[in-house]
Length: 243
Length: 49
Image (cartoon, rainbow over all chains, first blue to last red; front, side):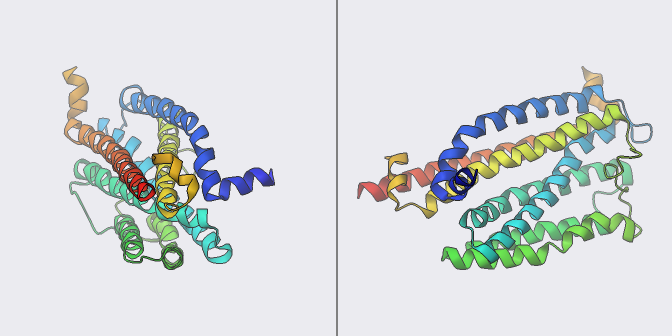
């Protein structure tokens, strides 16, 4: 078990191992995404207040969940990088930033598209929306900082500090709908004991949330493999990959 | 078919939201694929020199 773990966290081991598991993740993603897309668009009944317009939640909520979840993963990786200097964690953190930024952008855009028919405006400086925008800027700041540093060790440590400082924004996003009077509706999925969404609407949503996280895993793996190749470009084991 | 596209009057909001989602998915994949091609070219160049 330990041998497998140490093989997985070594750069060469990660590169060689992930290649075998990736197809299974792709199949799981495609199955869940196809079901979530079809059920969300055509099988789930229309909402009694929002009509067919509510179907935007099947892309908006998963992207918002992924945006926050990815930042949390980055924060965990930042701790591993700062305390134990685990290289693979630093690479995971760097690889996650761009993906997280794109999911946050998606959450902001789809939220805006949903807001127009429901609230009558594309954008409002509401606590939830503003804190999500701050998350987007945190991702961009992280990417900009890492791009400006050439040395890998300095880049990793500086990025880890930004990731850790920014994590304070996650509870603010989550509880913003409770702490402030906002236009954004309250949590739907945290209340599993008394779900505020019908099961026929919930199942496609859960499928889409899982699919979005699986897609993140696919992108993360591919991106991490690219970063590993770049960092190990002069190693002998890399030679055989392109030549 | 037109009923499905209209989405009860919300079609102009629902379909673009899904379209943007798929576009961002594709852009992410394409970016990583292009980056991989570039890196492999660089590796080839370094190890052939």
